Image (tube, rainbow, N blue to C red; front, side, top):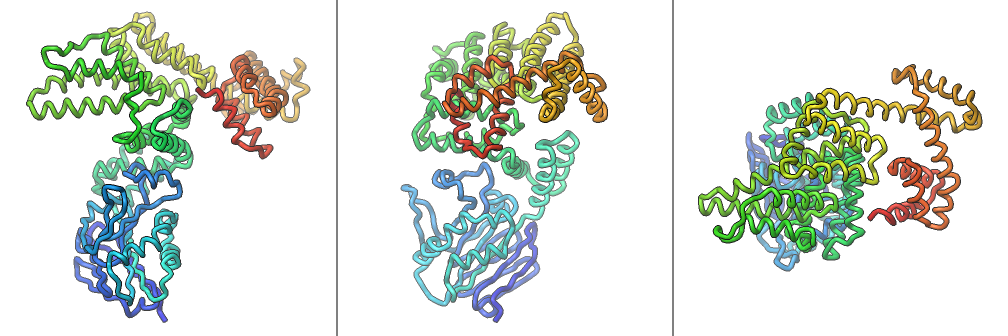
Length: 607
């Protein structure tokens, strides 16, 4: 007996596949086709694709994989194994968040809305045809109880394992006499753009100028609108294996805070650490901003009640929301206080400041539309320009500090110079206070990162004063960057030598021999023909300190959980904290030790 049938076709922008499975697969289904319509029906169930519309009725529903950034019920966010969105025909959520079933299971959807509200590339519908007659609403509730857990948690949707998906569905349904219909709808052009963007982004976790232009041209040619492009980009960036774990940590902290009703100090410390990891790992900030908007907007956590937001809120209220005769004018001191408040919110991971600005912007916009007076909106725009300058400086200076491979371009440096001039007109100490000093004192900035921050800040001042040219500052930054690259090349080569030839390095002859061998290795790699003595000695000294830490101190720290001893070593050794943490991670992995203890050692001093 034939138990499974499958169909493949296309209508308009959609490619569709239909899977029919069950004891009456051959005889229980009916099919009609015209030039613009494909229609399936069986025992009161019906599913039709008509041009750019989908019509349905009967017992069944729809499901798709959750894309990153879409609205998601908190109960689904809390359960990390929920991967897919499931909608039952004729069901809706009541005011008490309980699911209500009705007998009205017929409906229709446009293809545009389907791929906009569901997954951008692929969405599924299903029908269950049974010889038994039951009240529709009860049947729908029964179906949800049987197949809901499977459909919401299966990874087969993501992996395109359609045959396995149908088989798993039937096993969960456990109704030998019922016939299952699964309809897979794929947006062909969105799928082409999705695959092209994924292939390009996954190569190097980013896009070059030529790649951006190619993908923009491809989107126009395929007719992928801007909003869908952004959904697809965000989803792909999130799914990169180096991005996802860190973004998920951020999500888990926010979800935990929502459940507790607020962010605790330990939560804020972990968010600050994640911000550092985000910069070092080149994870797009839009992933975190999307989560913040989804989870914090209109939720139970009231970050605006924090002490740090009281002053900026008061300033904005005086500027925009008091009686016009009492409203204060915008003065430099107020803008400086707002910028410092934004910086404080940024460094503490407090999302309330940006939410407060959004609320102010909405009110100003509504007032302008109601009264026709755009004065408030224009005044707010003038203030927001400074926040845009802040974001630009923060992004570029942070990348310079945290990312070894980053070199400022001439255009970027000139932009930093222009922005610093604007900040200097407000307060001559503002730039150094919230950018240079703040980054220099960050625990995770490397020694070379600190040198680059000092060189950039001092160089910008010299250019403004007319004592240096832009190219002089760029040359100095490149020199530091080149030395940093050479340091790590020598460091890694010397570390490999020390695994087997440590003793000879205690003598002058041994050092000279090791240095000569490293120079030969680097010359063959085209890195450098000569290694400066000072740099070689620094690498050797740093590696000796690392060996002392791993062999002498770290075992004691683990045994006693003496985090003060750990902090004293990191602070006084001059070794980069991020590097030490990688050394500790390797130590735990090599010995198969519980990494939870390592996290405790780090978090003890994270605040």
